[in-house]
Length: 220
Picture 1: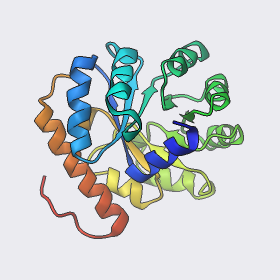
Picture 2: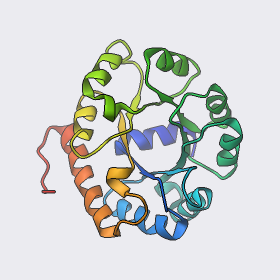
Picture 3: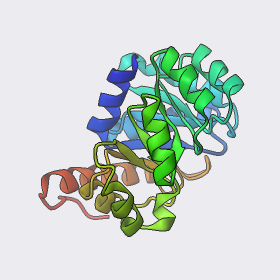
Picture 4: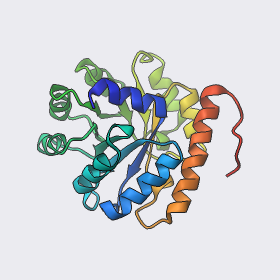
């Protein structure tokens, strides 16, 4: 999946489901299946999780281009190359490492570097990225996001860190392209699949409501 296609998939979805913890492939595949049933099709595995590369490969084999499957917590160039060699549709990082960005761009793979200051945003955008991961914005709050986006509203932001069912709609209504969800949505790899499915359905309703202005049709 080239970088533009991956970006458009993330933007359409408005959600990136992260898996951090005990998400080996035998756990991850039922989780991704449940989220696909909830109309969430963007999945971020994380390098500091159990069997992350194998789980990502398994999800890509299972879903092909019907899902956008990538890797997060990519902190250095060596790791980025391993992830790219494994066929990631995108790379996400909590930090801005120019080498990681350049490696992904050279492979025409979507990369969302982690930024939190205006300088980081401007410097990362200047390299040619399509999506900035503003992190940990949930902890800093909506006012910080609105302030930083004011002069930088030509940039595309994905909001990550401390995201839940309460703040996701607010960030989307105030200009976020998407929100990255891990703990609140998928837990640590020990949650029942049905709980994840229910939360996925709730989030999909919340995203649709935030984008259309039509009140959601289900209850939590």
